[in-house]
Length: 173
Image (cartoon, rainbow, N blue to C red; front, side, top):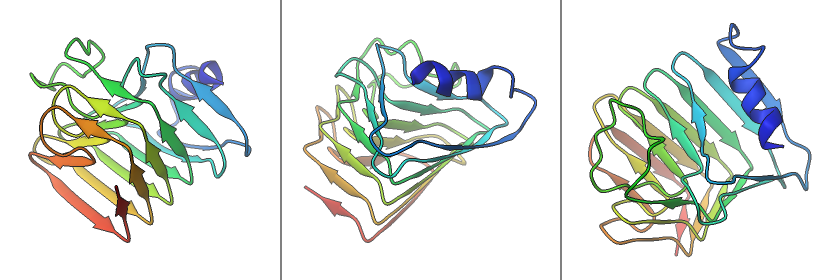
């Protein structure tokens, strides 16, 4: 559940810089207007083959803060939406265009997606699925599928306006 995931990231494990979670197949984490924010100083890996994170079109799914690293393995990310009033963005993240429906990788943050599927995500700005922004940001995606994502700006699938972007064996439609 979202509560269990949030507790693992911010609750009793806050003194553990490295966290590894395994979501059973069929798990659905539904976000109710609140994205999953990776706090600075955390290295989080979530294994979730057959598990879903659903934003219900109400918020970005993941915000990776400066100094954090997020690795997603096998998850299906769906219905994330980055709106102009995204108050969940880190203070150092000065986006005026609200991008990254599934994920925002901020300055000094890193994210790895391995075998993930991203679908039906949108942004009123750039990067309907993912936005990589700011010095020192890095996104690496391997064996992933992005489908049905859109942005009012550029990059319906992925937009990088700074940082490093590695895409290997990707399908984007």
